[in-house]
Length: 80
Image (cartoon, rainbow, N blue to C red; front, top):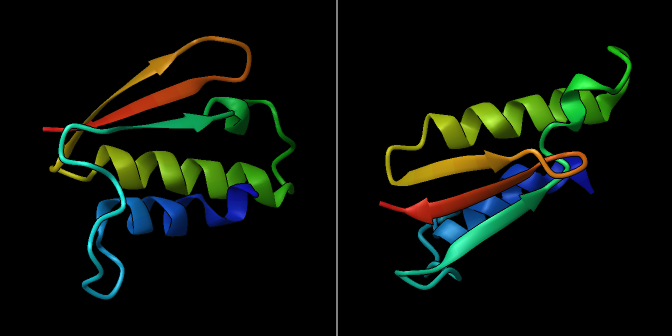
């Protein structure tokens, strides 16, 4: 469900409508298949969704992230 990665991220971080974050203060998010944007065809909506998610996380100053190059990529996202 790559089209909703950003919405899931917002729910975890508590940025969606002022809701309480689902992610604990010292918690981490593992996002799967984050390197797949590099292998999907340009017309594939998953490619665009994953690219947007990766940029969204990269631009969030509340977190640090690291990408593990395991299979299609796993991004580990932790609060700063």
